[in-house]
Image 1 (tube, rainbow, N blue to C red):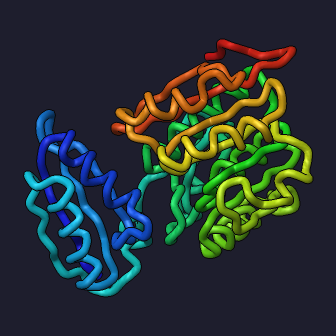
Image 2 (cartoon, rainbow, N blue to C red; image 1 turned 90 degrees about the vertical axis):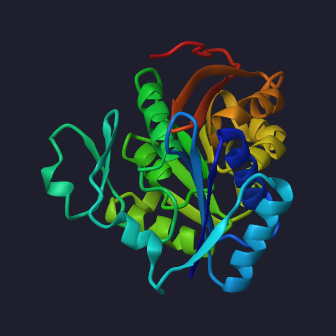
Length: 294
């Protein structure tokens, strides 16, 4: 395993993040960007081979010449699981995301979401997952989840949170078979597996999503570009009065996503920004549309 690192101003780091995250295929297995100081941001990526790491460096040099990226060796291990070991529980409104080792200490009255460290995305520590959980917490004050779709489910944490909050059923889809298996295992650990339908699928192309009744709550915690491409399809499978929670986009990418979803009978009801990431909550127009909620 190899780590690719570079630092610079926010605009340059975001441009480098874009090229690594959106290249198809990308030589990076994981990409993360974060703010070090008010003027300095850092990008770290992980690649499985030296060849892929060097390809990452070339992509950065070609797209953002002002950045100088370096490569360092990482010993072979599950770096995702290692990074998550011992992390504290994540609190998001009524929800607490935790592993079994911290679950007994959670205060009564909270909804515990048992999610163990592993290779699938979605432990609540990332601003996108936490933003979606906070959005769900606010929605639950005024509506029930109904039938739920969780696109890009990762660990299944969002679908599981909805099911533990009274959702009728949830479809959880991901392009990675490993993530789908993880979501199914987490649903069993949280005792909601009977109402979770975990499937490998890209976007909303799965026929089962269209033969099922349309959805009352839709989560799409993916990336800005696929969010834009899926705008029409997501609107079509959303019931009138449905809530649509979008995330996986950096705050500066909001305008392009909002342009894609505007004018489709979807009303932007709330925006959350956490750690440079945005979560957008839309409500589809219908007889009982709630345009405002806490």
